[in-house]
Amino acid sequence: MTINEARIFLNADAFDDLEDAYEQLLFGQKQYFLLKPCIPKVFESKIEKLNRYQKAAEVLGLETENTEGINQQIQLAEISILDFYRSYIDQLNEIRKMISQATCFSKLKELAAYRLNLFREYASKWPLFEAFKEGQLLSSEPEPVAFFQDLKQLESDGISTFASLVESGETVGILVKKESTRLYSLHKLK
Image (tube, rainbow, N blue to C red; front, side, top):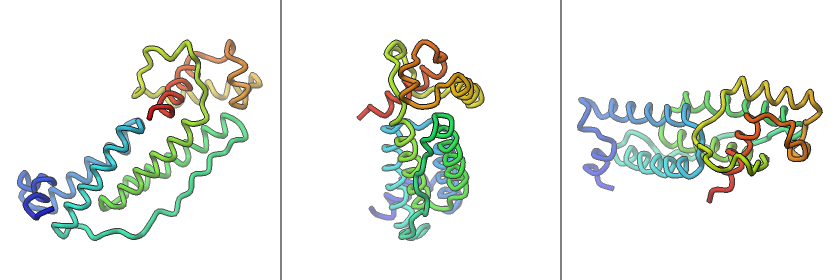
């Protein structure tokens, strides 16, 4: 990539200062990974774009190659569905905090990939409820408090594992069935 190509890729001419262009683009990308629901194919594409932004920033001397990795490991508790959800949310919040503090594309790329892998691990456990498969909007997450309340209700009803979730189809609320099917579908998309 040439210097002119890197400037174009970072939209540098739209700003008075090259640093401003870099910071604005980095901020926009961080906002995406902080706020958007994880859809694996879209995240993969965005992470690839971060790679190109990083290379352009390196060509322009705005960023050096990052060899430091993140020290996070995905560890989702599988004691119960509720614990699994809580551990996912705790780790998601931690990774979001780190994303908001990222100061370069190379770090953001690592963190975005970690968020994607965390989501994949989380989504892999949820079962399909066939009746909710059609018309499922994959980018629409449920309201977290309502979903958490439904999971708490399930646990108080004695439905605390994914196996019991599948077996208790009739007593499971619509919100949980829809979200479980959405997660299952996202996990199965290749």
